[in-house]
Length: 263
Image 1 (cartoon, rainbow, N blue to C red):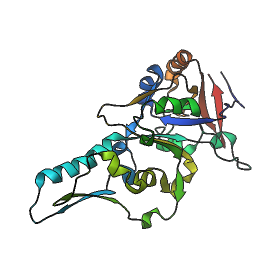
Image 2 (cartoon, one colour; image 1 turned 30 degrees about the horizontal axis):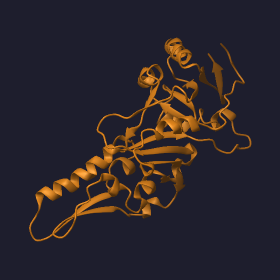
Image 3 (tube, one colour; image 1 turned 90 degrees about the vertical axis):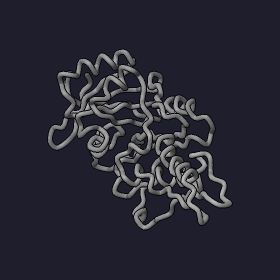
Image 4 (cartoon, rainbow, N blue to C red; image 1 turned 120 degrees about the vertical axis):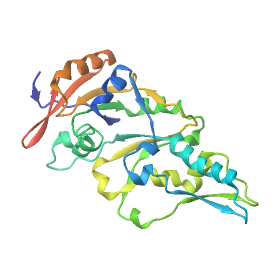
């Protein structure tokens, strides 16, 4: 083993960052969880406060109200997202590792457990094929780059679920979240402050309360361990990579730049 000018061919790839305690769940089981949006860390995305209810009529209809509120709860469960890093343009003078999809400092801090975790480099097309198998309808999956804007805090648009006298209550949580393309607006637009992530997302709607897993066995290109990943677990990670048939690398920070070690 040794540090040097190692690199990974990430042509047509994206990268998914995860925590150390997910190592076996992902690499040993060879699968990724597409988590419900209600479990995202960003309150703008997880709170579901862009969905609201309004009742009509002089008499309160508790049954209809509860159905409307359940639609919101179901939306937070059935709508699922997989967050990845996508390639970005080379910047003159930038460290090539920090510019690569597997070396983004902010992604390591936000999703990679403060560099204690790991990053999986995945073939974008093969991963997409696996995810599409879980979409019951074409419109139940959106895959695209995230857009970054500085005006999101000024926009208060939302979806209102109506119920009561003379109102037919929507029966599908998907009808609610997709009203006026609101699901795309909420989950594919982020504050400009996050732009360094250059995020690529898969937004899947699947009507089940069970976890949704996708196989990575065909799509994985390589695994990169964070610079704070425990060295006494290198051999375990390397073993999982051997089972997957991919290379295993480790990041190291040697002032003033990151380096990559091939294990």
